[in-house]
Image (tube, rainbow, N blue to C red; front, side):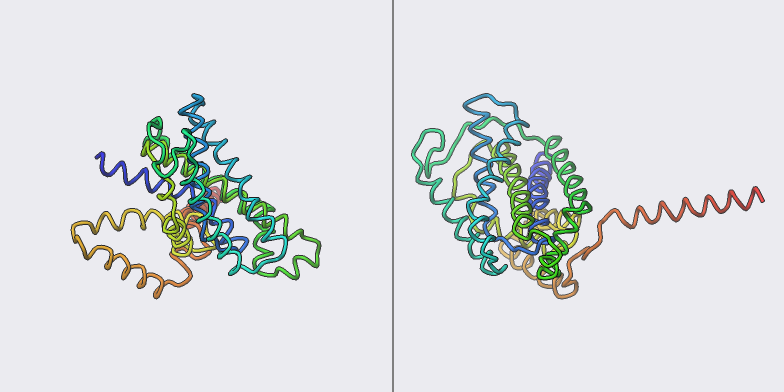
Length: 297
C-alpha cells in the first residue's frame, strides 16, 4: 500500500503542475519547455519557509507559488511583449529552465546547499494533502477556463490578429496565463519537496518539463481533466510495466506512439471527463419529469 500511495502522490503532484500548463498551452497556445524551473523555484521557496522559518505548510506552498509566478515575469515580459512566436517562446523557456537549474546549483548559501541540494525538509506531504490539492487545482482551472479569462485566451489562440483588432490586450492575457501556470508549478514543486524531504537542482531538468508538456498533448490541449488523466497514465504506466525490466520504457514509448497515432487530438480532445456524467444526469432528470407530467395528465 505504501508503494501505491507513493505513485498516487506523484501523480497528484503532476496533476497540480498540469493544471497550470494546460491554460498556457491549451488555451493561450504557448508551448513551454522550461516549466520545471518554476517547480524548482517554488520548491526551494516553500522548503526554506517551512524548514528555517516554521511557516505553516499551506502558507509556504502559496508563497512558493506566488514567487514562482513573479519569477515568470523575467522570461515573460521580454519575450511576450515582442510578440515572439510560439516556437521561439518554447526555446526561450528551455534556456530559462536550464539557467535556473545552473544558478541554483551554484548558490553556496546554506539555505540552498548548492549542487549538494537541501535536506531535512519537513515531511508534510501525504496522500490526503496530495489528493485535496489536486482536486482544488482542477476545480480552479476549470473555473478559469470557463470564465471570461479562458474565453479571451481561446480567442487569442485561434484568432490573435482579430482579437487585437477588437481591443483585447494580447500581452496582458498571455502574461496572465504564464503567471497562472507558473503559480501551480511552484505549488507542485513545493509539494514534491515536502514529500521527498530532499532535493537537488538537477532533479528539475528538461525531462520534467517535457513530461508535463507530453501530458497536456496526450490528454487533449483544449481540456482540463484530459491532461490530468494523461499525467496519471504517464505516472502509473512505467510502474505497471516495471515487471518487464529493460523493456518497459520501450513499451511505454510504443504505447505513446500508438495513442497519438490513433487519437492525435488527445484522449478527451476538447471535452471534460465529467461531461458525459452530467449529460446522463440531465437525461435521467428530463425523463423523470416527463413521466411525472404524463402521470398527472
